[in-house]
Length: 170
Image (tube, rainbow, N blue to C red):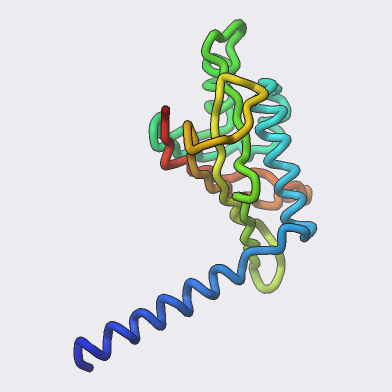
């Protein structure tokens, strides 16, 4: 196959793969999307913004892995909760920040095993501000995230893996 034939072929294969991935996202009005959007809200509006670590902990697997492009790896739920309690959520923290989801950035991709839903990948963009009433106006302090949600043995959605990356600062 000549070089001039390979390039269009590779472009077509890439386009087909991209189209298949784009179609795998669930509709924003679907039950799955709404469930995980609500879980994201609990995790951040209650757990992160209000520092209710019991709520955050209830949404995490014991063997949580959290990969952060600025602060490294957290290897368990207990380590994550401890870091939050002694850092962002410590009493009288003068550097408290709040997390906000960028509207319309949330995406959910279901994961199946033999046609049975066992989890989902949730991607989005969020931003951080010391102002708890801030509206998103620019790309200041935003980052991308991917949460791997798995249905546990009791039928509850919990986060197994987190990747938080591409953090930008003012």
